[in-house]
Length: 179
Image (cartoon, rainbow, N blue to C red; front, side):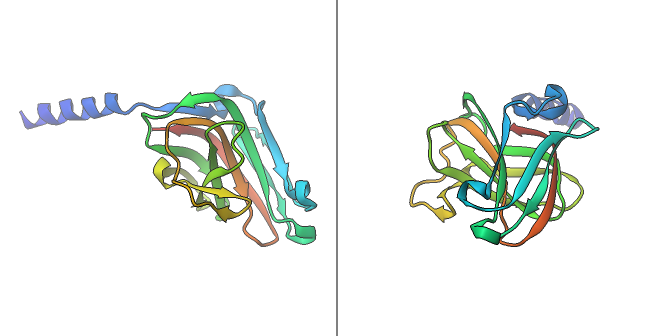
């Protein structure tokens, strides 16, 4: 009887876990819609690129330099606003290089600030889990006096590296989803 109860409980929790795939690179077989924004918009000299590798994963890589008021590079993906109110966390399946990155969210394409959260990579394949409620509002590196991400609508995601040091970086991404 305990085994049957355990199996029923496990099945119920499995079916109640809904998931929204924001982007799966192997499924899409493309990086169309993603675009790189380097610090050149502020006079910097950092360079990032974003492409599919031989395994069908996205590869965000390049070099960040603090010269000439620089210090970051990012890659963004905008899409039609999506209701995300039933989800509580972001899941990112990736392989990093041991460096820290930011993952950013926007509720609409017209929103000037982003909700951000840092994550560390280990150098191995891993699934980064970040609760949506932990994303805080920021604009040009300054934390805003506003509530954290409300978790109702999502229209843009961004990966950014800007650790205030000169460094090469490489972030391989399989998928981004919400759960």
